[in-house]
Length: 116
Image 1: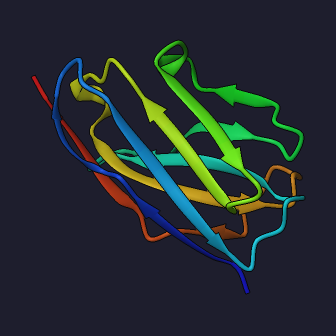
Image 2: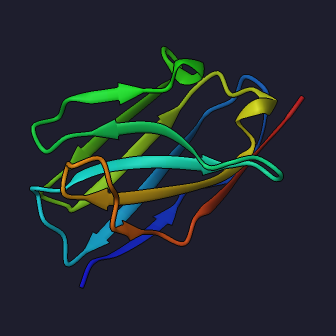
Image 3: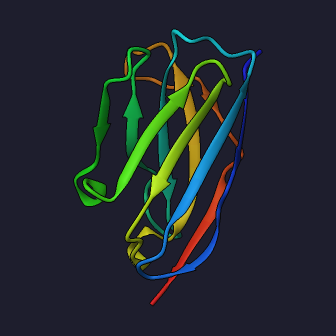
């Protein structure tokens, strides 16, 4: 059974940085992994994905500001978030799946709040 546990969220001012971590238990290095976010009243949004070979993809609004990475030896996924803006405020979730576009495993989420 795969368990994902996020950490690293918090409150920052616009322009600041945060680094989210997602520790995976029962983890497979063959998983594709991703960060999603959901703001109040909005649909869940895919923020960034990373394949098991390290290929990455980002939604347009975070390109050049966010960086997704993974450490397979530590079974940990990261999201480095720089130049944060208030629109980045959301609950952030990590997810893992079999690289078919669907994600079967989800963390409980970590809150990111960016003030202007």
